[in-house]
Length: 460
Ligand SMILES: [Fe+2]
Ligand SMILES: [Fe+2]
Image 1 (spheres, rainbow, N blue to C red):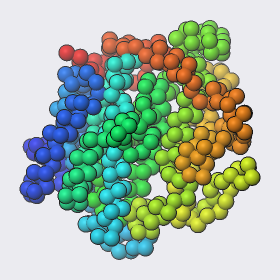
Image 2: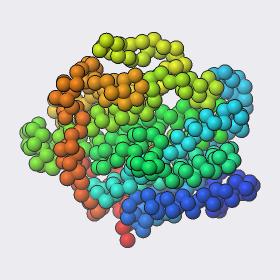
Image 3: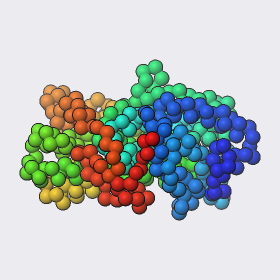
Image 4: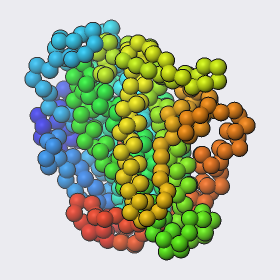
């Protein structure tokens, strides 16, 4: 079960060749997927040979094989973790019953929605990132971007497999629609707002992979507990890939900080104007990017009180009580709500704890350089657009404020047009192996124990 059949047109470990109808349906979807990749995958990259890892088994050890691949020829396929014998449902109304191997009729619509929403984020992020290759700060970073992109492509495959296999004709239609929506397109946008925002520069990319891919991890962890066993097994394998995406984000931001601190010490200044003139990103700008990506991402956990989340939980579709924030007479206050209705908030708070860890590691880099500045995640009510806090003006330190104070300070709290223009002005393509753009430090080690100056991408 865990070894992958690469002789099939579609690599898989689900015995696809034994289900002709399913195989044929997926083989019909495949060329449409490849057309989508040609149109919406990384711009100008189709002839590059990229040093990528490909899954060869779902075992924790040795699932990855590294080698040069042209991305349109990447072996996207269907990989599920092996089933646990006699797996039981361990939460909700169905606790103790055997996990479902098929979709129960009464949960069909909700399950389909969960799978489609997850599936939609995968191609969306590839679309958001498709221009970044043109301004990569090094071959090493370019390769990491492409690795993330092909794996998000595979995550789409994972969700489309479930749709085709378990949802019949509706599922096939959803599979097509996943290739038709476009990130940021007014007429037919991606489902979740954070996936319609552009990722215009590499600082945004690193923040996105640190904060937003971490949201992906939390959503996948919840799905990995699903009573619907095939969904649990496929998301477990997706999680192993997600870890690398967050690494790209955390180490990316860390290297930007490292380089900035180095120049701060060389020039003995913390003046943003002088640092910008020296071609590095000042720490307050990094803080504003952090504020933006953090706040946009915690909105992805949905409204603070959600009846959907409660239905998904008690019916056993999505695994995981509580205090939520509200605004009362102009003051932020906590209110107790039944645990089931606060599930989104529980998950959001777990997420916040998890993301603070990396921010502390970034602070270590600043501390080590002897610089008295610390990054901080903003208050969870800051810059929110979903739920009871939507549009409420709260400062990063958690004070409910008037529009006047907000307007006076917003340029210190969120990236301004000027900040974005400055960061964009630094973005230029660096193509020689071992060379790095001025605004970012090289990594400590290369990929797969290769040297940092390894030829990670052959441009041809
Ligand atoms: Fe993904
Ligand atoms: Fe990801």
